[in-house]
Image 1 (cartoon, rainbow, N blue to C red):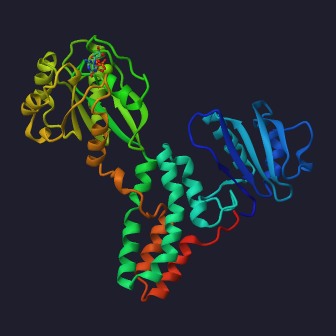
Image 2: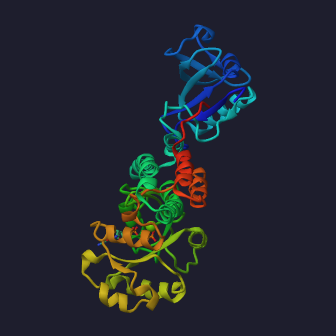
Image 3: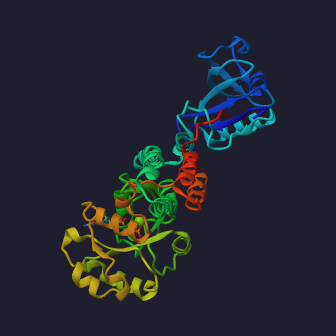
Length: 388
Ligand SMILES: Nc1nc2c(ncn2[C@@H]2O[C@H](COP(=O)(O)OP(=O)(O)OP(=O)(O)O)[C@@H](O)[C@H]2O)c(=O)[nH]1
Ligand SMILES: [Mg+2]
């Protein structure tokens, strides 16, 4: 990197603080143009931490910031600690671009004095992990892949070693299960308890709940997780024919959301009071392929078996009695949902490639003529991290 680069070290999205790392000779130009400190930064030494102001191109103050210096001039390696407004972060990186600083390619080597590329790659991906389990899984993978490199060629015959490499490469989907939230639409008739269920699943009162049918008008997106996998719960307006223009528009939006969702959970009021709404709903929506059919309000009485019998045949083995208010049956619902989306919660603590580079190396290893050649290839997985 002759001019230098920048990397946003914190997760995207709003946060209290965001950190942008700026490194390389052109960092000096960035600091001179856009950072105002009381004492000039040209005399800064590694370890210095200063209050400063981030200035826009016209000199207007954008933010009160803290600058930490990690390598002094002319090498320059600094962290700009901003308030975590995504627009401020974007502007900061745009200003860096005006000084010929370029976005560092992931993995950003040398960032945390990492042991090898596997660790550097894991740290580069870490901000994209919205759940604790995802973060733990990712950090655990470095050790798993290192173990693979050391143990595999010693123990296995070439054919076995190749089979293991193929499996590890084929598991590359797991990283996206942890990084990309599954978009799950909760749909059903009005008053079935969709919003209550969305709030229970996400563990916070994000959606308005009321006994009045037609409460949810626009859809509500709630970030949550299921068995450690990130999920975006989409609470939708109850689906019914309505002459009310606003409600009809909400229903149209719910239908559109259905199309874009990765999975659908149908929520029905399983109690006798919900019978008419269920029948009407089924008359129109029996063609859906839900991941799960939640027969809600089972705290009022368990009619699950009887109500299931009246469901379309394809839905019956996905029907589950739950109570959103009592949080009963939610774990089973999550398990059924994930299984239908092909995300296997109990099957992820195994070595898995988490970058395209690793997949490429594993595929090349499979093509090796003997165990020695395979080992040589595998060594590239944990190559020493180079400087950025
Ligand atoms: N007994 C019981 N009542 C529930 C349960 N879940 C929801 N309710 C009640 O059912 C009513 C409707 O709940 P909501 O969550 O607003 O239903 P909704 O499906 O979002 O309704 P709309 O937004 O109008 O389509 C409220 O009075 C809830 O308290 C449950 O598990 N048991
Ligand atoms: Mg609602």
